[in-house]
Every structure is written in C-alpha cells, then in structure tokens.
Image (cartoon, rainbow, N blue to C red; front, side):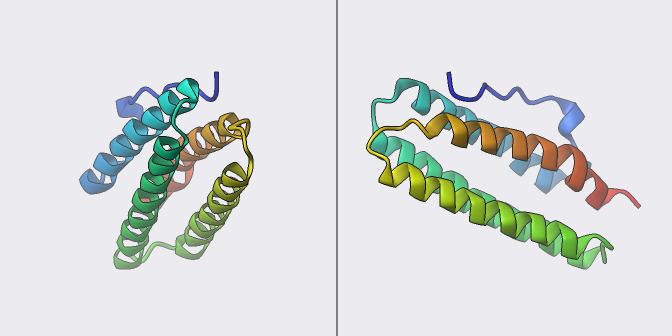
Length: 131
C-alpha cells in the first residue's frame, strides 16, 4: 500500500488560521491521492490529483512566503528555499511517473509528499510563527 492515510490533529496547528486551514486541506488532497494510488485504476485521475496538489502547494507556499515577508521572518530565505526545492522534486517525480508505463513510483510519491508535508508543518512552519 503506497504511503498511509494522514489523520489531522490539532498538534499540527501553527496558530495562523488561513495557513492551518490550508494545511488541513492538504491532508484531504493527499488522502485522495493515496486512495487513487491504491486503486491504480485511473491514471488520468491520479494525474488530476497530482496537478491539484501541485497547484494548491504552489499557492500555499506563496501565502506562507507572503506571511513571512509581512512578519519580517528571519528564516524567510531558508524557508523559501525549502519550498522551491520541494516543488522541483515534486515535478521530477511527477514527470518520472508520467514516463513510467506502470504506477510503481506512485508509492514513492505518496510517501515523499506525506512525510515532507508533515515534517515541514511541525518544523519549519512552526518555526515561522515562533518569535
């Protein structure tokens, strides 16, 4: 089974309503992808889920970066670099998945997304709001 289902918990709250809402939404999207990868039935639907996750992450990162600029976060540059590197890795994995005739990389992608998002929320995003 690729990856695992993410269960939202208040321990993931960072105290910024708009960002917390989007983090919860990301959990929902990642769980949808997880279900599609388990079924392995509709590659078009998997690509739709991936595209939606990528779009949402790009917008979410822009929102976080705007928040950091407004709050004059000392970690802005490092945090933005994490976002940029993640999006590049995500695109690489999506492209590998598209080239592959089977969806064997799907599990790798699901785990990559899930672990990165969880780790990023509980480390970098929390750090972003701490003074």
